[in-house]
Image 1 (cartoon, rainbow, N blue to C red):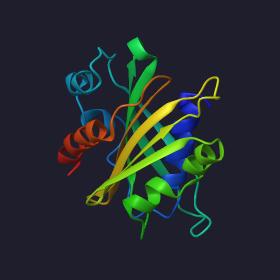
Image 2: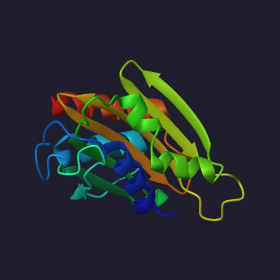
Image 3: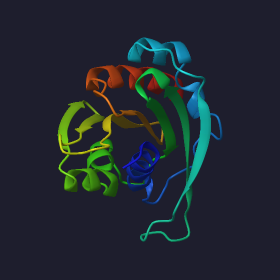
Length: 181
């Protein structure tokens, strides 16, 4: 599974429920972290953040409501990986743990026999997924997400090599949360 597909599945599943309000707009996710912060967390030089947005489909519970997930992607060329910050409207009645762990993207990785590590920090839910040894092109992923000020905010590290420890991803999310308020 490629990086973009894995990120898209996890993001789509986490945010496809009815939304309470829109996120701040294009480019907003790139303002949540700096390139220097990403460089320090990964130990490698990254490229500049690339803002993107994804229109998420309406949920079955509320077919008239669409939402946009704003993301910023920093490439980490030395390890063929990336750091992705996402921000979108928090689904009504959703909590970070459910959104982070009970979704189509995570289920797809579990079916592929990925090894999962989960760790909670209060309202912040973090998960790490490592591919089985038999996976020829497996990708490792570390992810933390939470709901803040009506927005679902997440930080994901993905790449073909060893995954970033959950504590480091959580530290990046803490910085993003302060700026998302």
